[in-house]
Image (cartoon, rainbow, N blue to C red):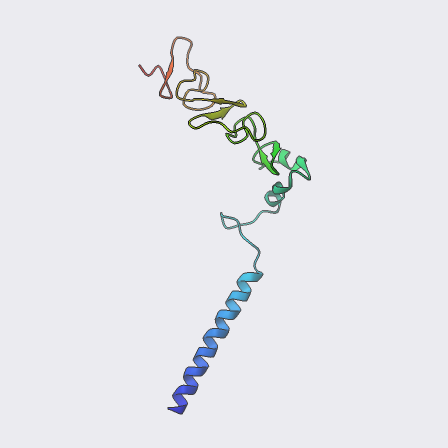
Length: 129
């Protein structure tokens, strides 16, 4: 029984050591984004307050800096037309204005979907009736 206890003890020590090594290696790795990779340029976007020019770079969410994040105030419903202006429920931001896409002839169903002069916008569709 003494020999089996030694084997069991060595097995437990090996498992504990292996798990400790795995945990320490996981802590050394760079943090990953939700998509599973990091991008140094996109990480810098969080600091547009310091350097607003990052919002003008390709791949940016938009050319404007609001609350230290790059946004597009022309289409962002949380920053519509200016930083901090939120569109009410069921409205979207088109051309910097909060509109209801269910009945807006210039933005019927989505931004820029203009109905013909003779038709109307109802339920987000041109000439529904």
